[in-house]
Length: 364
Image 1: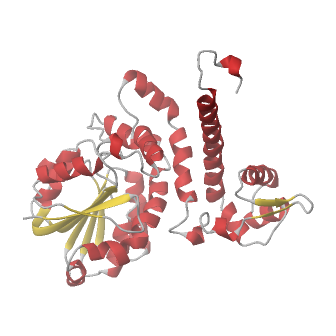
Image 2: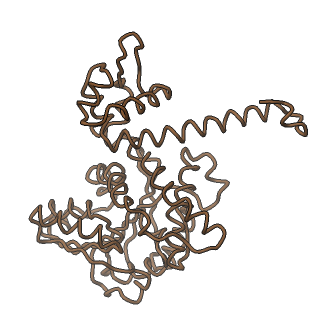
Image 3: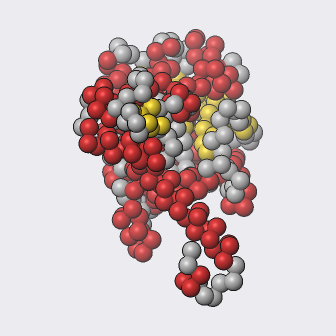
């Protein structure tokens, strides 16, 4: 850092340290884009299937254009993700890195989450306009959102559902085996409901979502699987408190879906209304506090506040909604659940999952 550039500052070391932090930011931001590409093109998967290989061999194995692969490899080598031997011009993805970057590594595949960075960048101009004019950016401007969320949920929720999440609710599995009515609010492409419907044929499953594209995929998946105990409905839940059928469902779930609703309190009120007496509500949402100062030690707080700004908050504001954001937090979530009518809110955390809280409530 040139001292002449900062004549008014005496603490040059502090400025230099921050300059280093900003350079790291640029490098890591660029790396996230390349990791996303490596995931989407299955380059990490291809490299994990090969010993050390040339750029041409990797390209052929992956079915990709060598010039692009070679430039991508250069970024990976410069970032320390891939090893390179100049003498043989061969590249290698270490097993310890493949363990966090390949599809076979799921649920530990961090490359899945790198996709959020490029996806959020696609709406930057619109977000900047919102800073100046207010309003929000609608779901229709995130064409890959449901695909990325399905991968995300497949790792964080679906992979742990049978062994860790279902056991949080006492006696739920016997009830599913006997036959109950289940609703998933904000079901997206329906991966969880499809999984449940296949395993518990005596129960009936319904999914609500605002995206007809996601629901079309969910319906097609149900048809391909031959499932007849599942249905998907396109629903705007803004007035769910007024629209919900009373005492209709035994179990309602909402996975990472409440905080970006236009009217989250109405959705929670509707969920309470649509549950039968002694019905169960299971809600998964981000593990965080409602207060910024309590989140400063969160391992991915910058990412979560960024995702909030670039997606979760703005899609709600686009509907003239509450704009709670990703980090609405446990305190506010608990307060809103109690306002909906749930007098006892149980908050569960899983040892392997630092990202999520799992709220369990029974309708009194």
